[in-house]
Length: 96
Image 1 (cartoon, one colour):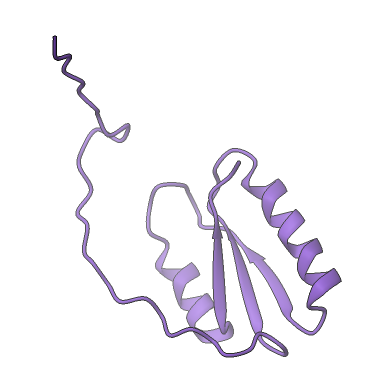
Image 2: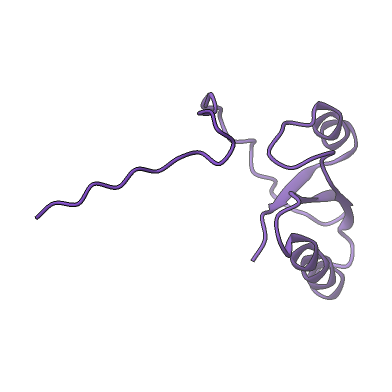
């Protein structure tokens, strides 16, 4: 017997998805600014704190900045602009 499963987007509408190329990989992180993006999911702030501690211990020359969007589930152009202008890389944290 085949069971049918229906999955719904919790926002109530399907998001438009546009594929983009990944940013080029940095050869080194030393001396670079890396943004840790707290995506406002449950416990993502804890994960970002742990990530920042890891960088401080293992790659102390990397400058870490934590940033958060204005709200979850929506694009934040100002946040993206800040990362693009002031950062060399970004790591997105979506929680545990």
